[in-house]
Length: 186
Image 1: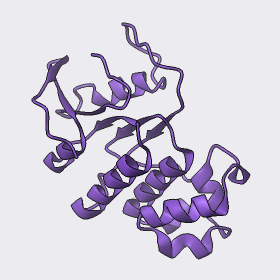
Image 2: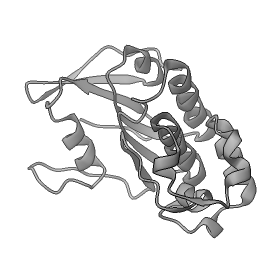
Image 3: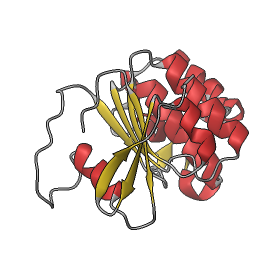
Image 4: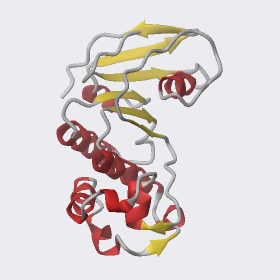
């Protein structure tokens, strides 16, 4: 399989078919298996189903693993607004255990805010919108598509509503990658 720069590819398939393993291998997070993966030397970010938010200020949790000083205050506020988390802007410098405080959907939106803040060239998403309703899911995809021009997106998802945000759909069936028809992405 070849993924061109700027392409948005959705991977789907039955549970246990190897989707997450493939995504982790593409993200350089899975050393097991065989074959060859060649990736461009561009900044990448991995958004899992359950995002990691370290204990500390919200600003530190958003910028993790970078230092919060790496980004301007305006960038933090802008990312939160675009991810429907504007109610958290006044709390950016508050220390908390954010994984306990935020709902699963808010945690996932926080991961999208991190993506907007960090601005990777490649974004790997493993069911990164599973705790969101379709409206929030659509808003997050529009935010990264509009906010990160030229982004290459490789995501795992099961909802048919996700297809419209991807230019290609690939299914994993019996250990093989099966190309599906183009989806007419937005």
